[in-house]
Image 1 (cartoon, rainbow, N blue to C red):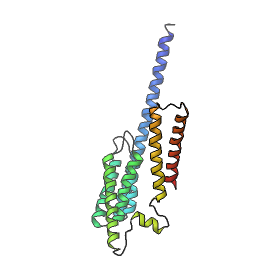
Image 2 (cartoon, one colour; image 1 turned 180 degrees about the horizontal axis):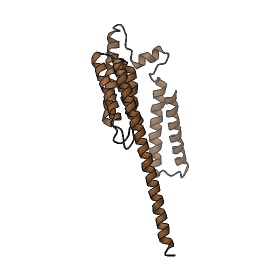
Image 3 (cartoon, helix red, strand yellow; image 1 turned 180 degrees about the vertical axis):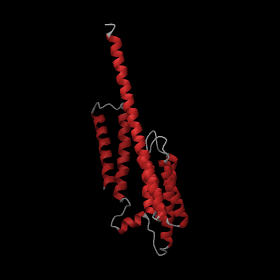
Length: 220
């Protein structure tokens, strides 16, 4: 019996070491793969920039940004490339290209978000830039359309055949339902919310009817 215990303990230790080695080997292989893919993507982005193809440069930089691995610099370089393209395009007034690059940064952050990766500040910065460009484009669009009449929501609804203003009947039903609900609830409260006796049942029925009436009025 005494010889069996050390043997069993040694077997468990050996299995644990084997599992740990397999996990480390898998992590190492994944790191090598992600690092190699990131390096290739950054090289392709460099070539695309040299060839004056910013859209392809963005696509390759996005690929690099999504290949995250321990100690690999290429995901960080991919994000830096995307930000450089976005800011340069924005400075030149090329909002389309800038939006593409900023959106690539946001997409890369979403794709790689985990407890071990991701940069919330970088994502927020990209989203703020996207909102800034969209707002500027809307202002430009409005300036180019001086005759455009801005209708409020109610006016637009009327033009599309729906009047959002509640009808007097709706106000009447809601008011009556509110009064009935308050009165019946007060009666139930005085009776301790117990359904004993005919008055309690009547009060409970009034509560139910008032709620149903309010729901009907709002759904019309």
